[in-house]
Length: 388
Ligand code: PMP
Image 1: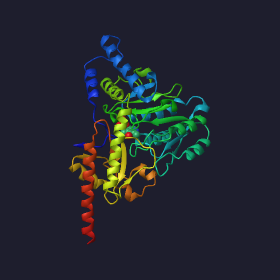
Image 2: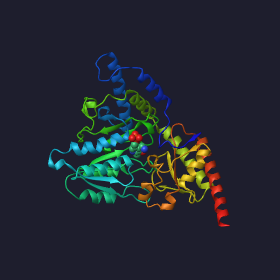
Image 3: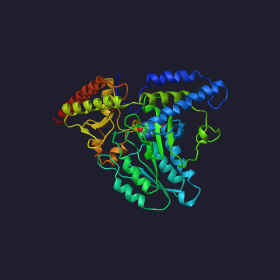
Image 4: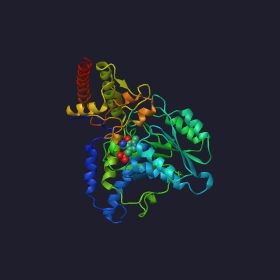
């Protein structure tokens, strides 16, 4: 089996599995004051440190959630509800990049529906998938009340990295809040939480378990809890903490603490994949190739070979890749990311994504290329027959 779909989910790291098994054995609630409770609390607090280090933040700024979808929801609704007091500070404008993940985009749309005083604007990207900074600058000048800008650190489909330094500068100058979905970027590039007000993380893209993530919140950023009841996590997210999940998340984050070597290894695999692809299949198109991209993600297309055909053919060779975003696979829809980049619909229908991670090897690259070459020959033969 050749797994090239780490942006969908990364297999569980052995370090995470071991930390989770240990945590499951504790048998105490982190809110209890007895010895078992204290042991559980120690796991959560230690995890907070490791996850904070990954984001470049302080441990007390980390709120554990059930994943990035919940973290995006907590940030958006939390900011809107948390800023209701005081006219001047009320959130009235939402600026969301056109390439954000559905969990952010759909939540922003829902927020604008529920709170009629909030206006949502989608910010365009260039043909390379990079946020149009001029459009952001102009947008921030318009309207009254507080604005929130949501721009991901890097895109999950193309790996294109966004100019967060400049986005942050523009947001700060306008007094706007900045929400950064760092899910695909975490562990693949250095994160600097000081640039933003909210940062979203998910464990399962790092080799941690699914169903756990975090929202990192800056001091003073508005945040009304969305889950209430128990006073867990300083009242910001009620509910007994997912102890095993949090322990597994932290173990994955910890293996990335000094990630430069791993990033270089992944960059080497991605480069090798793209170089060989272009060599063997010169008509192949690599999306966002002119932009800065993550070390681990390659979005590409072989014109005339649809993603649906390719996914099945590759799977038969044991090669697992993705077509566009995982969350939209299963539905035959053109990727909103490629559409925002102005990619021709016919080419976008051929888009595939290879994404590498901790368990990836050069054999994965070789198997994927061999399978793609075989498929392209087959498709050509069929096309020739049809033309004859
Ligand atoms: N944001 C991005 C950029 C993602 O890629 C994903 C996962 N596909 C999410 C958010 C949602 O993460 P989770 O599965 O933890 O809810």
